[in-house]
Length: 143
Image (cartoon, rainbow, N blue to C red; front, side, top):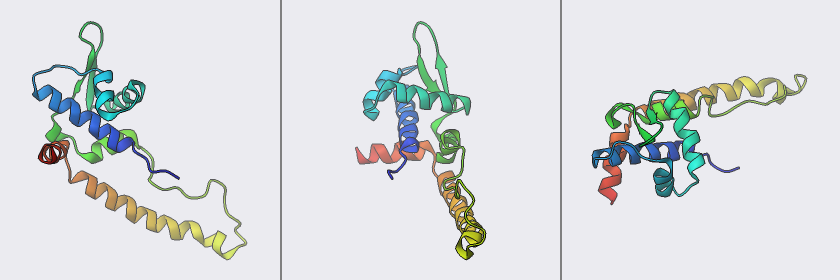
């Protein structure tokens, strides 16, 4: 099972757009963003569509088409990005109900749900502490 990189790619795209706009550009194309991320522009467009629905990015059509931030980097947390692209829980229980006659099958759901709830709450708390302005600052520091 591989790790999910959508949050990283979405944060990368929004941070890149923010820096690009600070450098005097109005909009960024999905092709430009995809070059930085090293992925297909279609991947970027799909993620930015979700981010747009969440009020984090805007698009312009026609001449001068492209993407821009809907809010300043300092007003976008990693939790905002996460909620826009990963609306469901981090972990899930069984798809099919385990055998209720089995002692483990009967008790595994409640036992794991309690742990998962705590993990989810900790994840959200940590993501809420970091803005994309913080991410950009750390990126520029590392450059």
